[in-house]
Amino acid sequence: MTGSTHTVTNQAPPLVGYDVFTADRALAAAVERHLAPDLAEEARAELSGLGRSCGSAQAQEWGAQANANPPVLRTHDRYGNRLDEVDFHPAWHRLLGKGVAAGLTAAWSRPGGHVRRAAAFLMWTQVEAGNGCPLSMTHAAVPALRADPALAAEWEPRLTSTIYDRELRPAHLKAGVLFGMGMTEKQGGSDVRANTTAARPLAEEGTYELTGHKWFCSAPMSDAFLVLAQAPAGLTCFLVPRVLADGTRNVFLIQRLKDKLGNRSNASAEVEFAGTWARRVGEEGHGVRVIIGMVAATRLDCVLGSAGLMRQAVAQAVHHAGYREAFGAKLADQPLMRNVLADLAIESEAATTLGLRLAAAYDDGGDAERAFLRIAVPAAKYWVTKRCAPVAVEAAECLGGNGYVEESGMPRLVRESPLNSIWEGAGNVQALDVLRALQREPAALDAYLTEVGRARGADHRLDAAIRDLLTELADLAHAEARARRLTERLALVLQGALLVRHAPPEVADAFCAARLGGDGGAAFGTLPATLDLASVVERARPVA
Image (cartoon, rainbow, N blue to C red; front, side):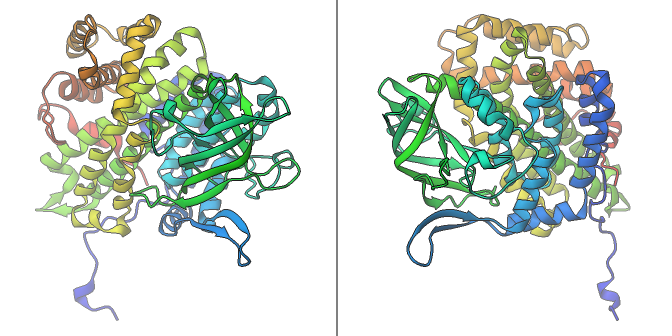
């Protein structure tokens, strides 16, 4: 018999058994907005099905198991033969298989594919972010491979497959494959032009032998990798298969796995090439130009991944506050906690709305949208990923001491939250990329200004922010030292413009007041008390 001192009261039930898609009103509205009417019904059904999976007890348990059981490297077998294999917990394979089956690598092969995939990726991140890496790399490899039509014709059907085949065997024998990426080296990091990995041409046209290393190689159990190496004509992109066509293993020496702060279910490796067979992608010396399409797509996934983490953090905080009582009332009904929750909610909605807008630009594919992405992607990657960590920490605080305990799931979100800001080019890289676009590509700025201009006249604070931004953009001399400031303002004005056009008035009003109008503090929970904060919190409430 349980003693009376152990009676459990005043605790929120687990947030489980709900539809993550329909419970996210901002996400559902964005999908509806950006998809053609003839696709909407099918997409809603598909995403709602995945949403129920994301909110299920089973998927949440898989995520916890995969995180608690990190991958293990096996360099050799018992006899001393080189293996270079990574063992994953069964839950990892279940999650990855479910992600592939849900179309998270298939955006390029169907109408509205990028918007549908973006919504799915944002949701699936909330289950366990680690398996997002191979899903993202595989998705993003497609635009890079299209630099070589023959390679694209061979590999793209496998990349966009919804079949997960975990076995290491020749790619032509598999119905679906996964890709990884190896760009950075220990001496260069983001400065990939400092790479020293050498590519020596072989007798067969387009084939090379690689010698060198990669300091960060994503998803080392993938079927193939896109890597950069120095060919005779300069830095070049190469496709490196793990298994050669005759069934023999390519030389792919995994030296160790990184011991990371978060993202622990995913393997990030240091690898060596020593006579490794590779196929050139694109022309020699054009490696950065070829792989930049992959980088842009993975940067968008950083935005979507951070938006997903923020949404889950906010959902957990609002859910907890809706049940927990203190000082005679539900936490969510107390003015100060309501202010905190509303502030978190508008940050989350702004991230989701921006991420889906970028995905829609990929689906459009026109010149104007491509120009828009040239500024919008690095600006969003810079800002949204940087906002993720403070949102996760503040949301954990909403749970009090419970939020500091592993069983709540909040510490996993906190550890994961800085990742997307660091990967695929950290903050300075993104800000300098935005600056280059501003200085060299006038069509990109024109497209950006056209987008934000669609909201002009709807909110005086947004209008003032656009005017201030134009003043800052009028003189880009000596702009490098203020590149972060420019990038932040570009992202905030764009988020404000999107919310003013598409979000409920109470959300847009709160965002413009606090983020553009200067009527908010440095910490969350400092929104003006005159706003309709109760409606903002209610909109963010997950319905279990």
